[in-house]
Length: 376
Ligand SMILES: [Fe+2]
Image 1 (cartoon, rainbow, N blue to C red):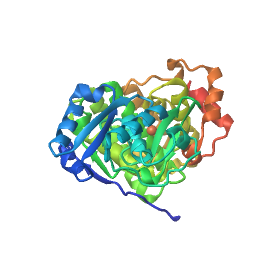
Image 2: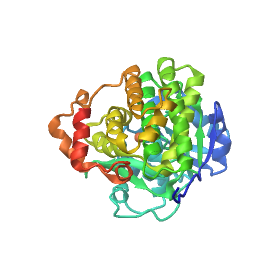
Image 3: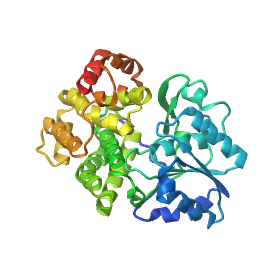
């Protein structure tokens, strides 16, 4: 066994109903919060109003920034940073899916830095200090953004989707309440759940995995694959919601240490160029990348198959994932979203980053192109 290093510095509270603790927890960080969320879902579910009320009842004033789009841009973070400064906020709360949490995470940190978000994304400026305290409250069970040290953003002017990453960006607290996921529509449940499963599988076979991240990932694979179909079919199934949320949370802890793989290396440029929801892009690519990797991680894929309730054989893991995609009605190929063969080269050109370099089997540009052709 090699040397490994772990980082689990975020204090997390998990369980049904823990959202109620937001007010008292926020009050410990400051007197005025910026609440960052998406445009509609949280308002419609009543969760946004409830969050504001919980904080106000505990003496925390709240300014709301509800402009986060599904694939958030650097400009959105710039606008949130401006609001933090204008309103004199002392803490930031991210409420929503991965996008809302990522915008809140970046804005909390960049509020104490000079320059534009775009400059940090491009690596022209570096994160140098901790930002404002940031509380992450995920309302989808999938991204793990509450535990990660990065914020995935699109820079429209440069046409890139990548991460701003720094341990200084980690949340001070994450409040992970499965009850908040009950209002997620089936389509979002499926996509975010498949993002979580992809992340669990990629971190389990990653070159950067270690025994601790493995323990989290393999357990998460079992929970998500067993309970995601139930949560998809009946959103009110609280046991299923809780177990998928737990799987997603454990996955975040796993991959924030063990990194990801080729699915995520490719999913980012696909998201940037074609606007396919991240979880759906991951779901479509996953079985193809698994097949590509199978030969170099047979034992681990056999363990994945067993965790998913199949015979412990590597190939069975791919079959199980394909069955799950069928159950969740995930479109079969990228062409469903208008991606054409001639588009694939630009996806390969923009693929890369940390995820790709931790894929267990090195993938050349030609390999990536073949994977994409299979996934078309
Ligand atoms: Fe992901």
